[in-house]
Image 1 (cartoon, helix red, strand yellow):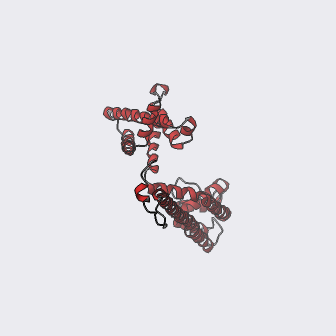
Image 2 (image 1 turned 45 degrees about the horizontal axis):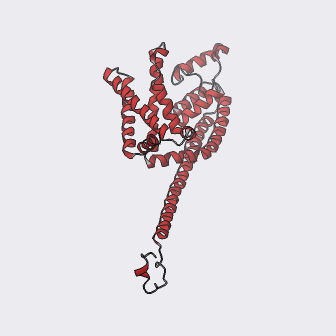
Image 3 (image 1 turned 135 degrees about the horizontal axis):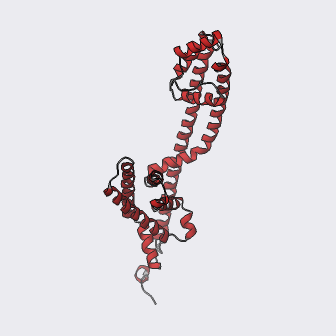
Length: 308
C-alpha cells in the first residue's frame, strides 16, 4: 500500500501530469460549450473518457494525501470531487433532460482550476482577496450615497399615479407618455419607488441613457407633471454621475492598485528571503575544517583523510 501511495504522490506532483490535466480541462470546457447547442455522439464519448480521466485524477490525489483531513481541507480537492460526482449522476434520476444538462453544465467551472496554474493569475487572485476588506468599506460608502440620491430622486421626480388623475392632469400625463415615454417603453417610473430609484442610479452610473432620463424629467417639468426646476434636475444627474463615476469607482480602483503593489512587494520579499536562506545554507554546507582564516597545521591536509 505504501508503494501505491508513493506512486500516487509522485504522479500527483508530476509537472507533465499537471499539464496533461490542464489540457483535458480546456478540451472539456470547450466541448461543454459545444454540447449546449449541438448533440454529437462522438463528443459524448469523449466527454465520458474525460470523466474517467478526472475520476482517476481525484483518486490519485486522494491516495497521495497524507490523511483524510488533509485531503478535504484542500478546497480544490473538494471542488473537483463535487464536479466529478455531478458527472456521475445517472440521467434516470431526472424526469427532464434539460435539468440534467443544466446540472452538468456546472462542470465548466472546472476551468477555474487554471487560476492556480499561472503565477500571474495567482497574483491577481491574491490581490482581489486582499482588496475585499477595503472594498467592503468602499461599498458601504457607495451605498450611503446611492440611498441618499435615491430618496432625493423619489421625493422630487416620482411621477403621479395615472389611476389617481383625472381631467387636465390626466391629459398632461398622457401627453408626457407620448412625447417622452419611459425608456424602454415597458419599464416603470424610474423613480417610482426606492428600489426602482436605486436601480435607476446604477443604470445612470453605467452611462446607460442617463441623459434620456434627464430630458424626460425636464419635459415632465415643462408640462407641469412634476414641479421641479430643470436646473435642479440637471444638477442632480450631473452631480450623481461625477460622484459615482469619478470618485467612488476610482476609490475601488485605487484600493485594487494599492493591494496589487502590496502583493508584488510580498512576492519580492519572499523571493529575497528564500534566496538569502539558500545562500546561508550553502555557506554552512560548504564550511569545513580549514575554511577559516587560521592557517592549517603542517601535515593536516595529508592526514585529514586517514583514520586511526
